[in-house]
Length: 295
Image 1 (cartoon, one colour):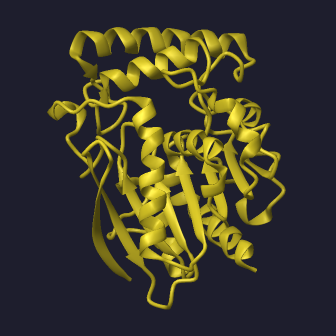
Image 2: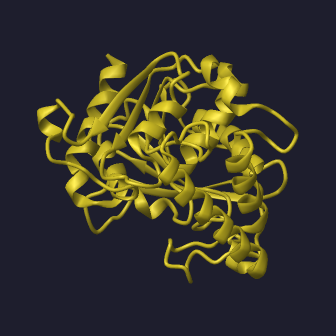
Image 3: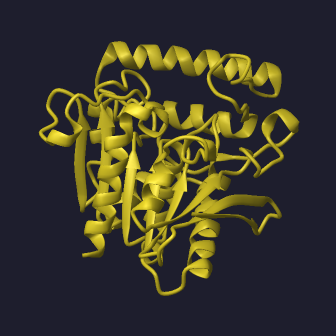
């Protein structure tokens, strides 16, 4: 595999960086892979151990592992004074899509998202369905809102978590996720204000764009993966409710009800889908699912 650092500048001047991982054989498609909040692209790619991006590359897929705005090498990070909004992350989807088209003209473009990158990408593709990818895998993707969480006890817990984290963010000028041992990246104050606002009201932009209303416009095949081991951040019932309006959705819930023999016994937590070595059969399933879309 050949690994190259890529850089692209957003319309508002932010430098976004990604690792371009090319397989040893001619690539059959390009996969844009984006991570969850409070982490970076290392959740997808580690040269010293098996990884999701490595699994895809060995299957003949070229993988663009993105560091989202304010994360990894796409600084400045929040702890270094960087600040950004949720809507800016949504808008960055266009930048990643443009870069993919430039790097691999003529190849199918696939999308692989974990948590944050999933709902920001869905928000943008719902407003620009003409740019949607050829296939989409969404790992543990949802947006926190009372509309999707039907368990009163879990919603009470989430509400308390959001209120406490908002206070911490306001007090520190950013969410101190590293100090709170929630991840290896702090999150920007404006982003966290947006996240808590949307949890209390609706999944909408600052200007009132209804992101949820755009989901029925996304007609590409989407594999939505949830896990019984994800007990708070994206519980399967919540994720199913969030993605229910996607017209070409395929559900995969890991746990006792999973009927796919190769995935039996795999019940990763929220981050484990992308980082836990026991999830390697899932990574292989994702690679096979993408390749099947080519057929």
